[in-house]
Length: 476
Ligand SMILES: Cc1cc2nc3c(=O)[nH]c(=O)nc-3n(C[C@H](O)[C@H](O)[C@H](O)COP(=O)(O)OP(=O)(O)OC[C@H]3O[C@@H](n4cnc5c(N)ncnc54)[C@H](O)[C@@H]3O)c2cc1C
Image 1 (cartoon, rainbow, N blue to C red):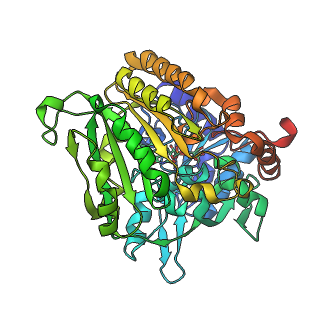
Image 2 (image 1 turned 180 degrees about the vertical axis):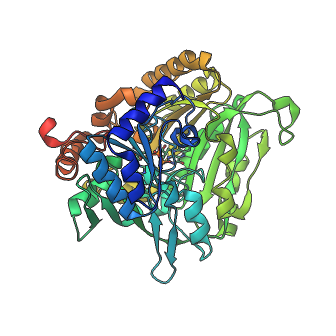
Image 3 (image 1 turned 30 degrees about the horizontal axis):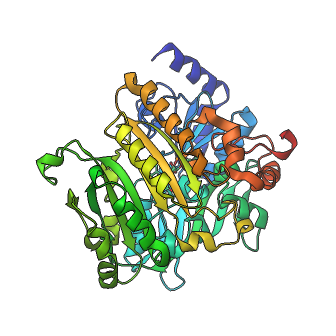
């Protein structure tokens, strides 16, 4: 055991970790334990933090016990859902990490079209359970992303055009607050907390259960994925933008810039070249989707075309292999934008060509009709005037390349700031933790003050501070 680990273990034991471990059904992992390094790891390989203790609750009672233990010991808590947060908010130094991975249950009521989802579930867990009944709720694009972190900050997936953000579909949250109380937040119970949890992130407590509204979906859906070499230029992207004008209520789509791998799936002449995919899911009848989306596949020379009718669960795993957990160092940024101008498309093409790493992605996302239909003050997601988003997902493997990739991303983000909706951004693609308070205030805009009041009510001492942190009202 390293000296660092010994000191941390000492600290955990001094605040009664051994006695606490005996009280819960789940697990307590301390520095030096064989599982410690696996348990503290998160998706982004750049993040290397050492919690004083890691608690894996087995049920809501364990969560209550953990929160009470941390509060009495004066330790803040980080919460790990799927561990995908690029800033590494799931883990912490010298404090308690609550790893929710033993709480992944999903219970579906197909008659009521509701899924009860435990706070540590992944989207793969949800899709598998709900698709048995031909139902779904909007999730993310990767199956091992956590439901909790994605949903609490908004949640942007393929079904957004028809059914909105993931957060728009949560009918109720069961939350363990900083005082260790269990609260049900819904339209008719703790409405301010219900408002805050839909967009305000993990600031207000530990969500032990989400109740999601479900919608008929699949099981077979049409997915379009024509891949154009970057030399095809702006034409196909402009076509996609204009094509969406009367179809953004059914088509969840983005243009994703990437690099063609050395793979038999592509003709050799394209290997290593930059490209973009017009990726789109038709959230309706698959045959109709195939017919309607056909023109997206006919805008010039294609490097490949992976379009086809497929199982919704398979679409939800299509991109899993691009970014396996722990393989990449990463730094992501984004802007919401009210429109996609020709100038933005040109800049996006140029920036994609300049990316220092072949693993880096960047994307133009259409947010879709339903994400914009909800009144802006109904959830903490804030103004719904962001019809589009431009994101930079930089990923690389060698620590020696950190500086060049982070600088590239920041520069590209600054260069495209002129297209943003009043500086607004999606905090799940927000950057690294040290960018902190300014970024959080920019992201929430007019909603920040209200979030801050809700924070003061449910977490007045800021125990839950490893997130896009909203300060309790008295501190602002
Ligand atoms: C490969 C990859 C693909 C992605 N794709 C998408 C996408 O398609 N759409 C999209 O919208 N986003 C996407 N994201 C971003 C993703 O939504 C965020 O990274 C999100 O934070 C992940 O949630 P998580 O539970 O896995 O994260 P974690 O890192 O575990 O947690 C993130 C935050 O949520 C809080 N939290 C976690 N669990 C709980 C809980 N039970 N109660 C209260 N707070 C909790 C944590 O405190 C932390 O602040 C992607 C990220 C990656 C790495």
